[in-house]
Length: 294
Image (cartoon, rainbow, N blue to C red; front, side, top):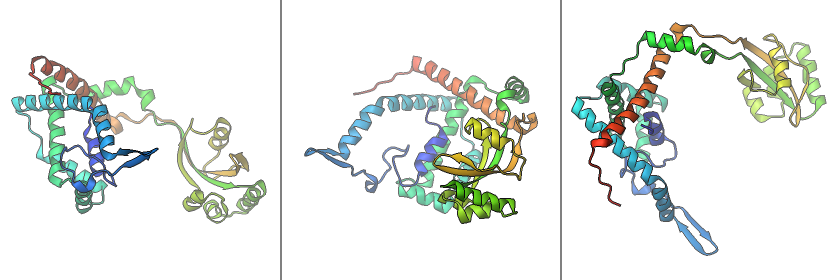
C-alpha cells in the first residue's frame, strides 16, 4: 500500500497537529480556521477543505477499497497481527517521542489515543502479512547473498571526510586565525571565538561527515587531500574566506555481507510485498462487488 505505516505514524505524531489517518477522530479544536480575503471576496476553511477533498478523494477512495479487499482476504486466510510485533512498534514510536507519556500527549493533541495507534499498526501488519501469505513470500540468506553479489557497487560506503570549518568575512581575519592555528591553537575553540557564522560558532565548526561528490570540485580536492588533524590554508568561499580541518577520513568500502544481511533481507521482503500487494488487489478487484455512490 502507498500509505506506508511509518509515514502514517509520522502524520499522527507530527508536532503542531494536522490531519491524521483515522477519519472522524479529530476534535473540533483542530478544525482549521483559514480565512483569506481577496479584493473583498473571502476564501474560508470550508473552501480549502472542499478543494482538498476533490483533489484527493478519488485516490483515497481507491486506496481504502484496496485496503478493505486485502483485510477481507486476510480474514479468509486467518491472518492475525502479532501482538509482540504490535507492541514492539508501539514501543519504538514511544521511544522516538521521548517515552509513552510524551507519545500519548502528542496523540491526544490531535484527537487520537494509544488505542487508535495500536489499531493502525495492527491494520498495517495485517495488510503486509496477508500479501506475504497470499504470495507465499519467503526471504532467506541465499536470496540476500545473491542480491549482495549483484549490487556490491551500490552497497559500497562512499569515500568521506569529517570536517570542521572556520569562516570569516575578510581575508585578514582568516589569515590571523591561520597564524594562531600554526602556533598550536585549537581549531574548534578559534571557531567559537572568532568565526563570523553563528551556526559554525555554536557547533565549533563541525560539518560532520561529507561524502565525496558533495563539495565543489576545487574544494573537494583540497579537503580530501588532508591527513586527519591537518587543515587547509585560507580558501575563498562564498562571501568570505574559510579554513577547513580534517577530523577523520574513511575510504570507499563495500560492507561485509554479514553486517548487512538482515537489512538486505528486509529490503527484498519490502520489494516483494509491494509487488504482491499490487497483484493481490488486482486479483481481488476482479471478483469484488464495489459500489461507489457519488
